[in-house]
Length: 329
Image 1 (cartoon, rainbow, N blue to C red):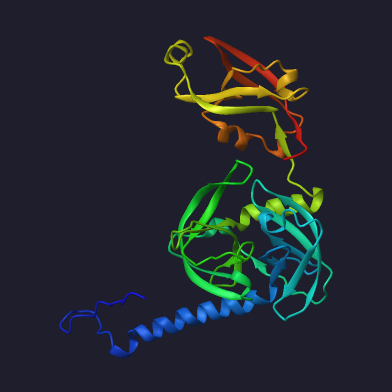
Image 2: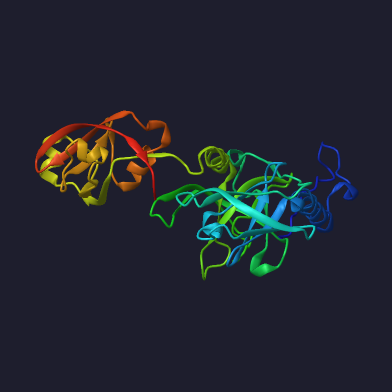
């Protein structure tokens, strides 16, 4: 830890002198840091579980009746063969409630009794430089603790489905295989994130899904077994907008989404969207890329009509599309 120096008062200044006894030493500061980590760890550790499938990962109990948050990639493909191990050594079977690969989150449930749920914090209150603690089971080492700081906020990573996982917490609290799904906690012992990924071979580049996102996803998974999303029914790619078309129609953005294919009987197909069309706006809001479409296509918009602006050659068309629910993938 870096040495912290304190400016002492000049003996001849008008203000009161600061006594040496009132100045914290490095030892005092380290003891305070240690107490914060110990206290947070002791509060959360009883809720942390090892999730065992073909491999192993981590998770944490967040309700007294056995609901556990973890990562989708930890439980994906487990085919019902889930087992959890508590910090007190008890083991039991668990069942998959639901998972969402787009956010890499999953909820499982165990019928083990006398569970101690973790307290959930608010990731929206985090600040860069804030102390955070990661707890999990890296390489099978039960209830391992690492500490660090919030390195950055609002990061994005690509999920296995191709969608961006947004609003991630970047931390230098060390994560290793097996930490996935475990809690990231603040100094008060409140869970502020779910540990998700590390960048290899870099050191100290680790990411967690904020608990504010996880709360929303967990509720949907407990209700429906999946996160409901709307869809258009196209595959597309980001392309530059031809300058002639941009000038002709007064477009400010440089890129749009070119439709590569249209799924039969999908909302886009029923609205006569064609391969080759370039989507440039949705409800008058610019669409510069596929990620902009993904951000719009949420569950609340299922069944609603939206106005999609497309370029078909140099022609500009406004197409009304009624969004439907995406039932898979």
